[in-house]
Length: 444
Ligand code: GDP
Image (cartoon, rainbow, N blue to C red; front, side, top):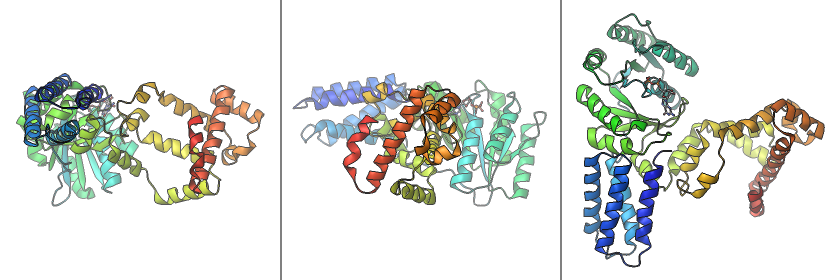
């Protein structure tokens, strides 16, 4: 899980400091050392770490934190501000062309997630910006890259221009752009070839595509899990192509944080997006301030709200509230809510966005097996339409049938139905202004 080690080590440094009645200069030096080691262990670039620690130290001295109240809280605030600054201070939006189409050229090493990110970006543009993107398949080297993009396009209903793998990528891009002009696509996303390593041949090809397509955005995809290699890659691509932004993928994986914290400082180019899962919905705008809060284990409630908003439909929400108030919330509604939660991404990632959860022991204990949710869904899917709409008709023989259908033991079926009933009762009480039932929630 991203940043786990860094978060706990920074938190320990702050805890050690806050445990002291009086903070001395040597305490402060010790904290700085802890911060430096935590960052180095997180694979943050050496120069970035040195500069970071110096800035924090200077600010702490300048603000006279040792004289003021709560030195440790002040240090946390300074570290938070510096982390934010190191990652770029503000979210930087995609560049936009004055006249359509805006051309986005995706570049990156093989396996970094370039093709997937092209699809994620197309989906985001389509849903959040009501755009009509066209994707161009110009990776003619990686086996099946063209097919992969075509499949992604079909999945998200975005057209893909392709000419197979036997043409020069520059000719493919040229023909693709001509089609985009004809079809009035307002965005074009070009998926270019990658390599296992940066080489001159690849860079020359990308330069030729750049010269022809004159992209408004050259978005480099790098894999966060490769740590300092991601930073080196970013530097290499930036030196050759003068990229305009970075999409940092696989932040849902076991990343130490080095790439997220170093790329901006090393390349002076903003991280614009982060990929946090394999699904095409799993792309978020990179907000340096929110990322800093996450690194410090203070949660990221704003991203959580953004995620919830993605699937928010006012009419549906009103209908649901009405059903809860009238106590007619049924298994169909329950299923819709489960699907919505699953769409927000892996449950463990969502939980981490809640303040205080990142290093909470609950996270380690909690059994957040995504399979469990699938099991619950299988049980609900095994109910008939009538049973889902009228759970009160679920007799023991019906429950046995559902158990057989879903392949779950009868005890689990009973438990799910029981939990559903308590949840329904509780939601109804709460929606009618009676919060007395909250205590019962623990029993669920
Ligand atoms: P390309 O060679 O750069 O085009 O890479 P692909 O788009 O084919 O992605 C390589 C692998 O990384 C695929 O298995 C993707 O599903 C996976 N991937 C891409 N982005 C993410 C991400 O943000 N999180 C995770 N967990 N996997 C990702």
